[in-house]
Length: 580
View 1 (cartoon, rainbow, N blue to C red):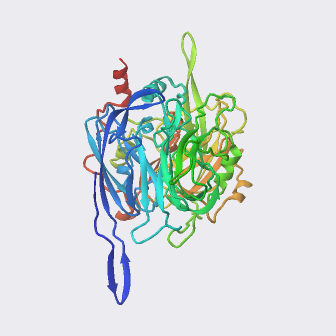
View 2: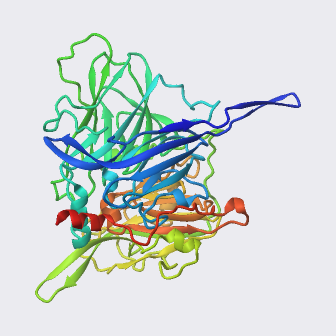
View 3: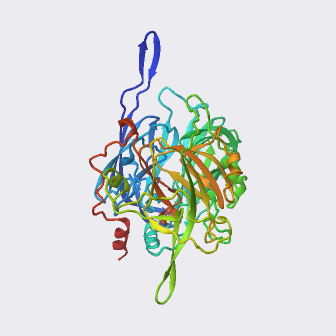
């Protein structure tokens, strides 16, 4: 890996006025994907990682920088890399969304991504974007303020990245391959991890927890990443309050809390003051479970790391455990935490909530199934859908087809509302909506102001929280609630003053979520549930934002070396071969 800065900060004198001109830097990284053995929970397995690291390497930039990442695929199947929460203005070619902005990078090949950082500031992350490969292929992105600028809070004494992840004692991609064939449910993880380690409460993991040493009387910045496959997560530090200051690469009005809750795929910046008696304190997390409460077999691992003070004290005693870490099904704690998220309004970080909505969409998010009548028996396959459409990947990526005006790969009829209206949150044990499988997209004019109300349904009695994510855009969360959305009553509760500015937001179980954004980034962008189990079943669609009126508001020309869609060894083919 090498880093080559461009021009430094320049000091100019014009008409006796001092003007600071901040020039962006250009950075270069090499990501080498290859298999490596790792041992956790008493078992060793081989898994695909970047540069031999798990989690993968951290990318460090300042706001406005550009990063070139040359990805060398030495693995056994094709994949892409996505830069989660990065807007990539006019540059969908490097978004890394499989079958939507590119086809996978073939084994033995490489592709260089150009990652353009524009409005982001704080913590984001990168991950593989093909089936469940992101389980082991992911890492953090740290975006500092522009050169010459500072945080909107006192500069911390130090910082720590904590990546929350999911651990399987086997190659989960083989299981996912079978699930995609049969349509059955995904496996339960064996443990949750922090920076690659399950912590003291898991088998063969005692004393292997990740450790972070701090000094007494300081303030530190923690950068949290929820890289779990399908779960939202509670996190707390024993004996210490957390001051939340940022989320998804945007600043928040600071607030103090004893715990945080991260939606799947979300990132969060929190400050912690080391003002407790010198000792050792667990930094712990557990799943926030919102699926069917009659099922109790979900992963109840308490993942842990240790914050330990430097100095002299009794190190033989066990660390303290967070007393205020919410329980697995504590809906109230999750809801109350989200209500406290409000954007920081300042000259450097203005709030610009769209007020002239030109497109309104009402989108149901559902778990579904398709029943198959065979000659001797009946069976079913699980699906998920948005507005009763379950996404199907095309044979070439949507961006190439759109840019080159190729027909037959997608249709322009993703609906603005569901085909059926009923009591969406009632106890609906059957699926009577008969979802359609298709590659349907929504087209937006450049500059449109869009409002989307997401509505969770309880089809199959399987309502769950969904982490809704839009590529290429961030959005303001105006409100959320439980029950069916009421356009008269619920709109009166909208926050139009300082709503949080996110790229990933939770759609409550048996509830609704309203967002607004301006479609000012031309390109082809996925919109989906970030949770792995819902995404592979089809809870996905695509927004095509048309070009504006000039080159500065139009899609850039594609790079010359986009991965070929012609004949690539997909993960499914590779795993079929390995299983023989």
